[in-house]
Image (cartoon, rainbow, N blue to C red; front, side):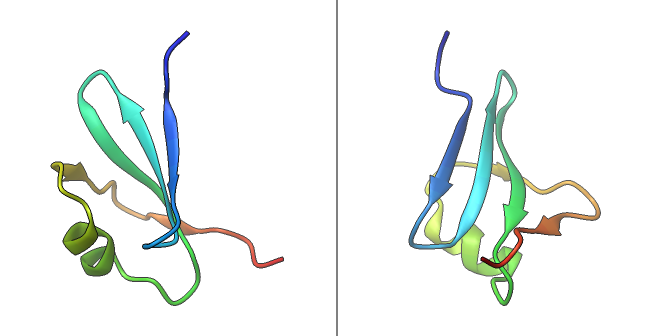
Length: 56
């Protein structure tokens, strides 16, 4: 079993690692897709209707 998900502290995002590449799964409240893209060196797929993580 390999790595299939990463949580990016700097961008407060959850990114799924798929056979097709990195897919944005969740954003923390107040964090935008552009912030995540600028902090991510790899290509990032952003699905329509991306959600935010729950605040604790």
